[in-house]
Length: 298
Image 1 (cartoon, rainbow, N blue to C red):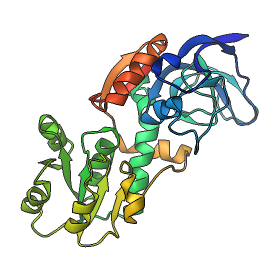
Image 2 (image 1 turned 180 degrees about the horizontal axis):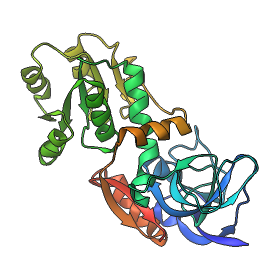
Image 3 (image 1 turned 90 degrees about the horizontal axis):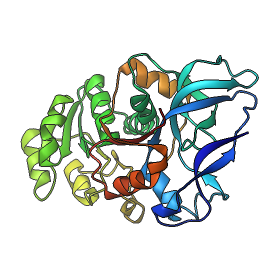
Image 4 (image 1 turned 90 degrees about the vertical axis):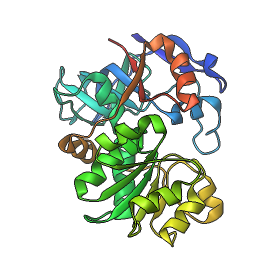
């Protein structure tokens, strides 16, 4: 049997994404097959598609993109712990730009989460919680989050506030009210941001989480007085500067359960049909999506 899927047979621009027939995958031990209702679209997807990740993350062609999914269990492998009909979300091993995908790292989807919200959560949520843990953020500390209104920054802000930290959230002028609603002290990014942060945090800051990548690393070290508690997930200049770049983490069910227990949510952006994946990639690559982009297969 076959299914519909978006595949690439070579690296290139968004037009290499083609709606095609692909073999229906069969679940192995510990896996479920999920009838996909929504799939997350992430920058890593179009970086893989373009070939920008070819040296560190090569793929075999034809390849189905996509890591995040939400959907209904359609078939169950031995020891998977789910039943046909269960609504789940998490990470897929076989690509989520498809009608069906295999997954071993999923949990049951709460009724309060839409398909798109559930599919949007895993990568940004895991990244945000991982970096806050690496920064060892504690109650009473002050944390600067660059890109506080973005996908990762939004969850990091909510989680740090819940920990009892004071968050200074940097964002664009149009997003400052939104950042304030997340519980942070909003500060506009751009020239002069260091002095603006100092004015709202006169006793200094304890850690900096760069989720934006706007060339703020040097000034962030100056603000902290040390590079020890500065982490970026977005600025590769960190490598040349000897600063910490955090990339990749544990795709665990415990992470998903933690995100649900905390009630953390992303702001959703555009939703596209499966056949319109190329348009989703074009919007994502602009960096101005205004929320998490998803493919919806309902």
